[in-house]
Length: 421
Image (cartoon, rainbow, N blue to C red):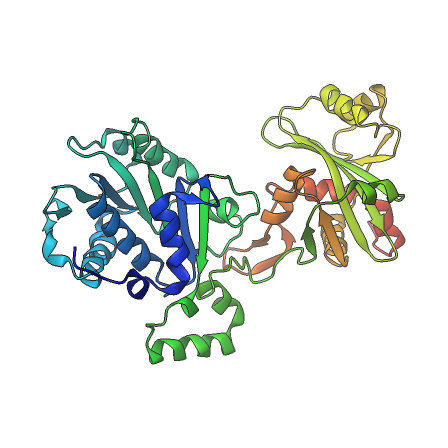
């Protein structure tokens, strides 16, 4: 390989990203999934392309590059990888084929193959004889509608045991979708990241090679439409343009804090098969308008009996619980199991009023270790939009069990502050 300085080829903002991909480790933890997300023109795909070429040269492996739609891959990933060989000054060491679409390293014969995911079922049969496929790059991950489509592809790649010294690397690149409820955002725009995933976020300011004209266009958008600028060029999932619960604080709530809590509130939203049962225990600091969520019972397929037992084991059964009044039989059953429970009053407009009241608090503090179910739902929730894409004044009616539970728990406080149900 021609002598090059990678520090001059790979932009400074991506130096760590390249190091993590190369070693497969970050902070001494093994990584399998490497996520490059962010705004437009940030050099995500360029960096991954360079990484793929370098790894293809170094190791006797094959690489699979994919996009959702097969006929888009030649003009994107294929050309991007070809350009990477030029950046590295080693284009003469490769064969570039169009039919089938391949980039072959001459010296060893290993290669990059390209495939569309138009039919993910066909991915089960992908196999190469001489060199194992150990690297998968999925470009424009957000084009996939569900995580299940991706999982089919992943399973087909990771199924074989690799020789000693080799490891699998799954690379994702994408611009975050606008909607927070999109599966990609819910998976990677969160504090709950599995240990085998490394995430790198970038934006256009990382790319020193952008033209003056491009930078000028970006600045104009920043001045005229800041929300669109934040989404397109900073890579922020802005939803409908308004972020629900900007007062969220995720942090550890200490045992000493909990010992001092003296204004307890508790709520339940019913669930069983597909919707989780959601119980939460709060402290409401009325003076500072801060709400602390510090414990939960949360999960699907929890019967009322089992849920009641879990609540009583925590010694919460004697404190008042306000539950969704839509299931009077469940309320009666919980009373039989020894809980101090009543139904919420609710009424016309109570949902919108309750959500607004919560949004007006100075802080909603959630301990993500003690309350992971509620934390995830508060983190993911977004506003509804109409068919024209306009934001509606109500939250999505999916995966909002913890938000509903919180409204019920604080119902009486809302009435005292002038909210009418």
